[in-house]
Image 1 (spheres, one colour):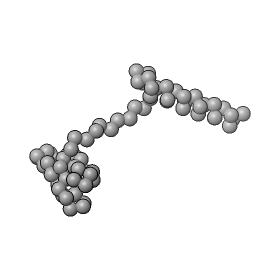
Image 2: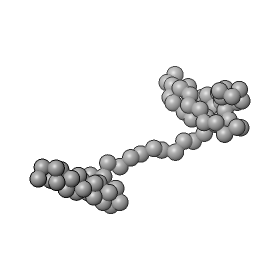
Image 3: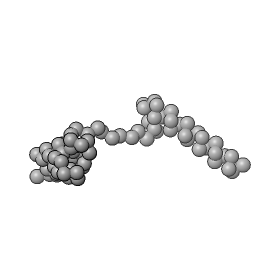
Image 4: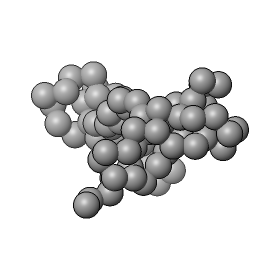
Length: 76
């Protein structure tokens, strides 16, 4: 059976990760309570070099421009 990393949450609101089989729905939390498997938010990070993601691209372009100005100042 394949094992995967899942998040679990106990009644004390502790979030614990467990590398378990798919069928496993509960584990023991570090505080001693039972922790139930939860659906975790997906963590993504846009690198900003794709103009299809306007906000991320604008931040990347501004940082890139600021860095170029800083380098030009240092080389002058």
